[in-house]
Length: 485
Ligand code: BES
Ligand code: ZN
Ligand code: ZN
Image (cartoon, rainbow, N blue to C red; front, side, top):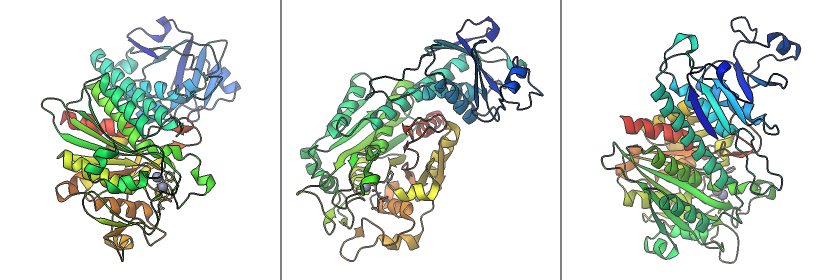
């Protein structure tokens, strides 16, 4: 999708169709050309309500207010509604009502690219988005002067962010038959091949040498051997050093504690944390952000078989802690335990964030659209939450408490991989991970459970059916902020 910024008014731009955002439900304060016809057609300018005027080549979409989040979803909904049309070019006013608000322009660009996404790999009849060229008019809106250079930067950042999100979506949506640990490692290698990123892959032999026995135990019964991926972006004088750790379960059958068949469907999503890290690494390299960022991914498949790890096993993690296994479906925390230890051994970071579709309990606690964020200290959690806010993602804090912590104690090992309580599972999973964070990193770490938003089987806002790319946008905003400070 090509974007062009122009200072010409929309009336002077040649395009197949014009997209108009309608903010004012009663048309009292805005001049809308087709006001009467819109009323006749029953258009009430509700949030994300779309009306196409074929004869006039105009597409109207309702929007509650001109916030970044609203613009992103309105534009995404609008472009999605054009999927079966043949319009190739589109024009739109920038709707920037203040000289500083390049964030609105970025949100608009993100909305177009995110809304135009569809996953076609396995479709015979591909749903191709016809719009190829979008012209955005920066004509002074309400008389504000716009800085074209700043607008161009916002446009580019929006493009990189949304394309990285779509890149993540593509990998998550790919079936476990086509995307297994070695394939994730190949994707990481190809990212590094075409850029300044460095890439190191650990195969079983190296994983054994690194004593990553809990990760290896989860991986054992799969024909697909595990990989740990380490991608790094190292500018010369970085403002901060950040490690990102992703759960990359290319399939989670539950292992011997087998999932019920209806819960198993969609479990290709369980690599979403790792795929988010891949997307983030791609984008920070393209943005050339002045922060050192290390992406670590534990890519593993959790299957059943004669060689499977079992409830009743006691595993020894990389940091020497022993773990009683009572449920092999709580495998993500085992993989993350070892990868978190490895990440801390390799890099002394100012911040460490991990991303995982870790618990169904997170979805129960905060719903399908929100990520839950836990950790010992407010600073890293707040960084994620404010990144999410400015990126149009939802994230909220869940606090640790010492009473819940008791529920993951074990009679026979240092800790148990599941809680003895039915409740608070998103928090206890975070408290399990905390056991693998060393003292130096305790206040620098936050865990983001993306089990809710990573994969939703309907369209919502700028997100399609399936993978959303959760975590990518919030983290890019956070890293951009750290690169500036
Ligand atoms: N990958 C799942 C969590 C999950 C569930 C992600 C639904 C997305 C949607 C994870 O490995 C898992 O199975 N967790 C168990 C933990 C339990 C056994 C303590 C869960 O949430 O049921
Ligand atoms: Zn599981
Ligand atoms: Zn899992």
